[in-house]
Image 1 (cartoon, helix red, strand yellow):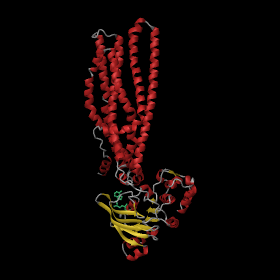
Image 2 (cartoon, rainbow, N blue to C red):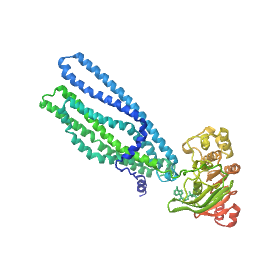
Image 3 (cartoon, rainbow, N blue to C red):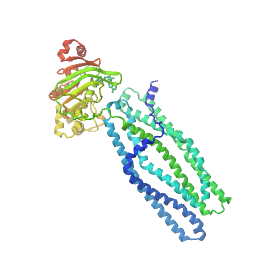
Image 4 (spheres, rainbow, N blue to C red):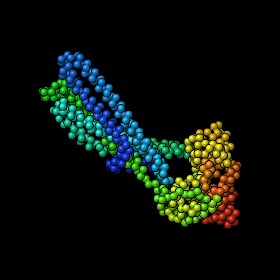
Length: 591
Ligand SMILES: Nc1ncnc2c1ncn2[C@@H]1O[C@H](COP(=O)(O)OP(=O)(O)OP(=O)(O)O)[C@@H](O)[C@H]1O
Ligand SMILES: [Mg+2]
């Protein structure tokens, strides 16, 4: 039951069923427009190589009909030499063309990725709250690859193959109009076949890409949660889920290949039927006027005749896939940046740090208010502690202050400036946040501390680390400040990670400081030291501290968050005297 439910959750296919929609394709021309000249040149190169390759069958006809009967050995060698030169030319021209289209393709890839990443960085938290991250990854990595390949190679190839097809028919006509008609007579069979398999083939491909996307999403989550998986001994259950998803990919792949795999045999069959017809007509002497050499030349064309048709079939599939992928990519790019600078937003001047929430109502999901008519006020330099039960909305309050989410009602101001009227970057750059889960990036400890202020000198980094007593443990590491932080800092203890992120926040020297459970993993002895460092650093900054360990916040003004509001407000002693909720919480911790 559980497995089924879980599997279903990851087995939600993205809807790729939308019919072929050329608007996405038109929009994608923005990426290739600049390379129009290169692509046209690549096309010209291909045209030349196609014509060259169509000349070669003429040689065999000439040799059989003229040189062999005449015993013209010299002519034979000249023909062979021409053949070698032409083949060499074709190879060179094709290489040149591949070089051009690959370069264009790779540039398009990096441009689309650039746009996507830039946009992803601006998307608000609630975008990430509601989507499997694995599926976002697939779009940026896999879909972009396929799309770029089509935009550079595919479009050139479609034009080229159409041209080849026409050129081949022309050459065939020149060689023998009768045999050409015989060949074209098989075309309707092929067209009927393609019409029949077109739609199952498209569905199979879309299913395959959906299943791939699902397994990626699951894999991504599993890797992130591997420690939890192993500690709960859930490997087998998860293996089952994963196998199920992998099985789906396999089935989808098999089906897609089975369908596409019928095309080649059908083409082979038709092409062989045509050849048989030609040989038969030669044997039965039906076309008495056609020489053996002509037949040989023509057979060479029959083989080439089906190639562009097959290629066009593949390219059509790619076109369908590409438009579906483009739809996904543009969907990300069109995702509104709901949290953005308003029109006419001005830079927030350097603030003193008076923070005021007035009558704030906020809901993550419409209708479920997390905060209702909440009021709070912090004077410049004041240290405010937010306490309250789990899920009361403490982290939410500080997220709102940094404008990670927009409120539904009320106002939030800093020094009288509404945070909605100022530029977000000017707001966040004056704010230092240490969030509930510390996140370290790949790089050295030094890089991580410097994350928020890239121009800080080494000495300033050491100073910040010393201030929060992170220096002690960092200097004991074999590489000191140059120790590489592995995946999210998994080689450091939780407390060490918090100390590093502490130094990072302090180095950024924010006017407003937010510490969300920032000291929860630091042992009591270190905490005392950190407290001393903190006291000096809190001075002159407005700070919001969220801590479950109440000993940390005795010197702050305490706001008790509960019932979507602030229900108690005062110093530690005042609230104890009140014998209210804070009193209960505090005495419960003493036990
Ligand atoms: N991204 C989110 N989307 C939807 N609901 C959320 C989101 N984040 C938090 N919530 C909900 O909002 C409420 C307040 O959450 P919040 O994280 O602010 O609590 P908290 O007081 O910080 O709790 P804790 O002490 O456990 O950290 C909770 O009921 C939670 O379920
Ligand atoms: Mg919280």
